[in-house]
Length: 456
Image (cartoon, rainbow, N blue to C red):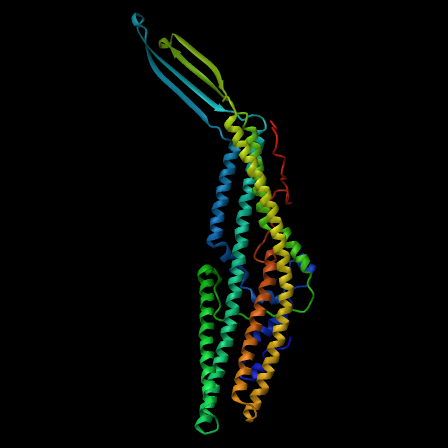
């Protein structure tokens, strides 16, 4: 790949190209659907991304992931409670003294032990809910890791881009300072007009202001990375953003894989399936569980003893019917959310794949423009040295060349971010699972069931 900054270098606006060229020659972005299946990553991508071990450690230590771990622990606790059931043993007892008048006083006591019993079907449903609680907890953690990884990627690319832009601003400011010094000498020798000196002063001031802005953005981006992801161990010098390659990529294959491994979809479907099971459980609860127990009593000071079995069952189903109707409605809403999640993830995946393709083309145009502007600045520099070009024309050309070089960096950063984001959503790096937590390994293991009607 040719160096788009060659002309700028000869014009005095060099930039650190060695690392960039090494990455550009190392590999292209990807090689279509075969890469999506093999899991291999292009060297250029690996050279631009942070160290995988440090990135993974930063993701796992992020507060969002820590919170998800707490939610996962809570899900395990709920699962344990569901497997055990809602009923506890209840012990009871009483003591009393009976006054029988002339018959005397007698101590009497009673002891009882009882427990609710789940009606047929409820225990199995509770076990299914417990398993699903664990699955949803795992999906919650995985989704948090994915969201955190995406934030890390964006923050990393922002730092790389602002670092390159700050370098360009520094070189532009140095060149403007050199032009100002040269113009001042020519003015003192009577070979330049005061207007030329004023133009050089203005250009130098603009360049230094742009440099301060660039430094501020770079420092803010680096600070955000250092504070949010302290495990990254940022290098002193940011690596250059890799140049997109020329080989064709099967963007649709990547978009399809993004949908296949999406935790958003799996999590939404898991929550909907759990809501559906809760609705089924509420329907079964319209028949209340009975309580069965044993009772031992002693009356008249032990003259009479009683040992018996008793049961109780709540009567009436009005409140329980309302709860069942509420859970059924919530389950229907949850499945609607799951369907919406499927649509949104598919839309986002296809949009990102399309953006990755088009932004690569946009970088090509920005690269072409940067080359052309650099060549123009180079020619006008030689012309000015021969007194054949006015300083104002040279400064204008250099400003256009600087703006084009910065536009190339921004276009390259956008293209890299889109492609890297697509690969991350496809779990090509940093994410080491396939997006499924179901024990049978497939999405949709728990399908929605009809909720209307009385299925007692």
